[in-house]
Image (cartoon, rainbow, N blue to C red):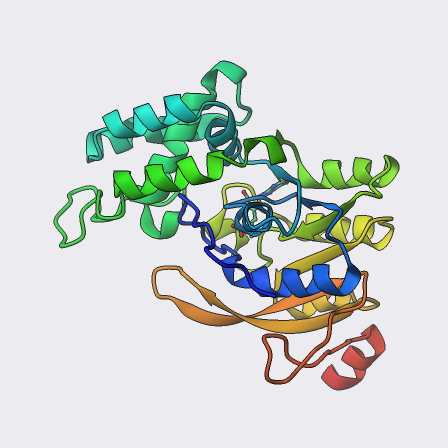
Amino acid sequence: MSIPNQIKSPLRYPGSKATFLNVILKFIETHKLYEKDIVEPYAGSGIVSLSLVSSGVIKRAILIERDPLIFAFWKAVFEHTDTLIASIEKVNVDIDTWQQFRNYLKYDTPENQQIPDLALACLFLNRTNFSGILHSGPVGGQSQNSNYKIDCRFNKKKIISRIQRISLLKDSVSVEFDDALQFLHTSNARNSNNCFFYIDPPYFKQGRKLYRYNYKIVDHKRLSDILRNANFPWILSYDKHEFIELLYDDFLKTHQSFRYMTKTPKNENELVITNMQIPSLRKDGQLTPLVNVHLTDFLSISG
Ligand SMILES: C[S@@+](CC[C@H](N)C(=O)[O-])C[C@H]1O[C@@H](n2cnc3c(N)ncnc32)[C@H](O)[C@@H]1O
């Protein structure tokens, strides 16, 4: 199964999992999850869920995001589409505007009436900063003495057409501002029978560099504790690290190679972990053979 005419995100997202779609498709196919809603508690670009809904594979998606700017962006795409588009058409893409939008990084919680402004700030910083990182510096530097200027990735026409296409999904997508651990914890308590979860937390190694909201060791541990007791199907992607493998030592894991679109695009190995069976693994496919690392195996290997 593949997705024809795939949508593209208006955001250049660090760690975007567009290339993870084939794994999720196999997961859905293997476990016959077509009738369930997909929940993404760490939404980011939301590209996995949005592509699945847009192609009709899944009927509904729920996106959760803790970063108020990212949350506001998706909220505005679906609920303030015309205002957002009008503001993109009007905005001057220069260093003075960049300085103004930097001020929006101070907000920790989005007020309803701020959503359109926060959304524009998010898009602006995402498309004018290095690698789409909201808290990094502008392309071309403050002095703009570079061949690449601040507006080199701000093609208004393209961005607007991507927003328009995605906004058509508004009746099938809900966007919530929440902490993922909190959300997952309460999902366990309420009836989540009609959902499956695609979980893509901040990276263990690079999280702090890429995202304003990221995880300490204790948070990674809490996530694994919640997932260990989860009563819903989940599939998790993580950067490959021994600590994470140990946290999930009793779950099935495999590795997937991803192409990351950071400053210098590169292929990285990523962990794929689930509380369901991992779908058929073929050497010639995207998934490499299953590696189920148990704590005891790990200790004997590293010892
Ligand atoms: C690895 S990225 C997700 C990328 C996404 N899967 C994609 O394809 O674009 C992790 C996301 O989690 C968000 N995040 C960080 N801490 C969070 C928290 N406590 N609750 C919810 N989201 C959080 C970050 O802002 C970031 O957008």
